[in-house]
Length: 212
Image 1: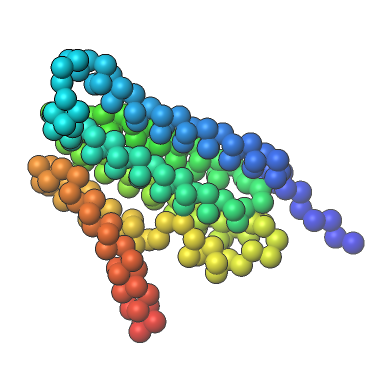
Image 2 (image 1 turned 60 degrees about the vertical axis):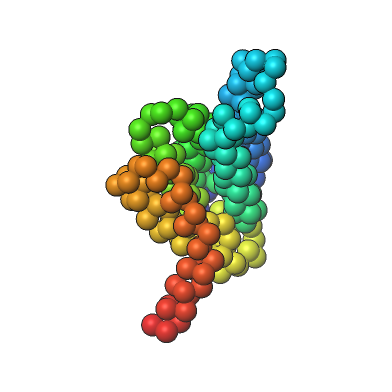
C-alpha cells in the first residue's frame, strides 16, 4: 500500500486553521469599515453648533461621497472573498501570503479614502491603484484554488469556482480606470464608473471565447 504524501510537504494546513484565518480576515475588514467613519466623526465634532445639516453636507460632500463609495467597495470585496473562501477546506503558505497582501490593501483603503478629501494630487490614482491590487489578489486566490484542488472542499467543482468572486473583466476595467486616473488625475473617481460595464464586458469576452 502506497503511503499518501503528507500535507506538510507543501505547507498544507488544517480546516481549523482556515477558520482562524477567515475569522482574522473578517475582523480586519470590520475594523477597516469602522475606520472609514472616524474622519466624519471628527468633522461633525468640529462643526459650529449653529451650522445646519444641509450646509455640512454641502461643505463636505466630497468626503461623504468618498466614504460611501469606500464602504460599498470594502463590502463588495469582502462579499467576493466570502464567496470564494466557501470552496476551500484548508490552506497553504501561498494562500496565507495572498491573504496578508489582500488585508494590507483593505487597511490601506481608509487611508487612501482620507486622502481623497484633501487637495493632494493623485490621491484618486492611489485609491484606484489600491483597489486594483485588492481585486487582482482575489483573482489570484481563485486561480490558486482552481489549480490546487487539494485545498478545496471534496466534490467542489472547479468549473464553479471559475465563476465565483472577482471576474477578470473587473481587473481589465480597473486597469483602464487606473491608466485614465494616472494620465488625467483631474478626473477624480469618475473612472471607477467603468466598473458598471463589468457585466456586459464579461458577456462580450465569453462570446468571443465561444467564437474562437
